[in-house]
Image: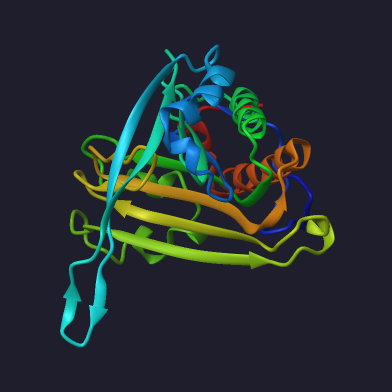
Length: 283
């Protein structure tokens, strides 16, 4: 165990650098939002950005999303305007995904994720491409890691042995009769002002930690959405900051690394000794 010291979001022991041989991570996301650039919804507008990314992300597909606006009044909901927004999916042979829209860009890695370094390199490529087409301001930065931990066959709530009781709460105790737990999702929202280690940030940092039991057939929101196939324990760690700042690559990458560090340390803290063995932790 490392020395306990206050961190920007979590007062937990520092984690050593580690890897998981059998990581439960199913999706890692890094997203930036920026003021709307209408031309990014057109083929001619996206072409320069595609060219910037084509070596690493050679395949592109257009997606149209229908958006319906409802007007709420005394008589109840009334039909409103309907409009289609356009996004562009850029992928590679590893199935890492970049989704570009008029006001946001998201990097998503699933099975292709190995360590944070290649993921950070892809994030930097995405930022460089956005800067090259005239993105001048970042309005929101978010980093999100989703893990789905399937129970072992024939064992009720085997995840109880992998995660600390402080995380699981009473749903991980013998209070619940074996085989009766259908779902239990908890959400904790944290907020930290830009002081101390965060003093140079343009806005407060927030984190949303969602965790609990999910059943087969559950759809977990993601990019793309995730489908749960077994009784599982979900750990969804989301660190983000909403506030205007210049689109400066070095600063945004430093903030990405800071947010990832919070997620990395929190996940390490959640594990029991048996959990560390189950997921194959190495240093």
